[in-house]
Length: 177
Image (cartoon, rainbow, N blue to C red; front, side, top):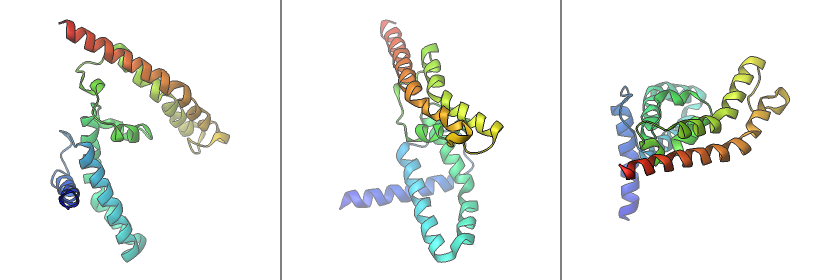
């Protein structure tokens, strides 16, 4: 029973935190804080949609826009990224769901870690840029942008290997000093 109370308290605290720090784009928001807030917004949107329809949902979106952006930026900081990463489609979802990692705690990331990160997201960036130039969806294979997304099957494992090597090299350097 105490677990259920704790979870509901966490949900309420996450919403309170998001709205009390709605213009605070510094600091961090933990993964539970972020996802409890998102859960609350989704539930509120469903209730408002049923009760007031599309106009009510639009009003709710306007009310929650700034707190949602702020909590998302703070979540990016928690995984060791700049808040600007919320502007990159798909990649930001991966980061928002990521736990704080050893790679995120390395102050100055090694060349291997940075290269691995770039390799992982390169198809997403390519698809996004191609969709801007050619028009259409970045996931539609008929416009050509979707072909970039298939590249993730190659780039993600290669990028993760590079990141792991970079973190290993950094940890080895730290243990020797």
